[in-house]
Image (tube, rainbow, N blue to C red; front, side):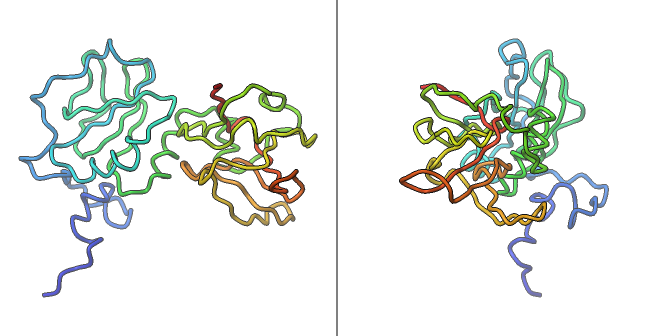
Length: 252
């Protein structure tokens, strides 16, 4: 026989929802072998010591995907949502899970001690994780802009006239996007910047609404931020036209 490609090895561990996203076989496949499964004997988290809105990451013992999640997501955590980790499969004391935790890592978002959503597993797709978290933590207005590419009405954004020194960050990940010293008055109706923080953005062509524009997305989460134009001031000549609703401001 011939060994299958690497992405097929331990496929259902990497893809807990089933083969090719078709819903699986109905059989529960643990993320690890039984002797390495989530421990039920370790001390439980105390719900009284956690936040009203809290992300809990349930991790397995000797879990490669947990280590990958730690390296790619948790190590750089700046989200406004507090996060904690546990090797236990049980909810924090006094809190409740909707169903058993059977795969690792499993990220569960709690509100007032009750599970409201979970993200099972991690295959290296950071944007998928942040997209999930954003759908539960952003307002409807923010979601419409972030995930559907909509635009807030001109001259309505809360940061349009903000002149405080600080950093504008991604509302989901908390990663820096723009510094206040790159902000300028463009009179366009939206907060404008002539340069982003290095590596903070992704640009792609946008031909929607009968126009050709360059869309600006957050590199950390993949959400829509706005567009960039070639009518900005020196030294870049760029105008990054950004929606206030998809920015969070952290003063110096």
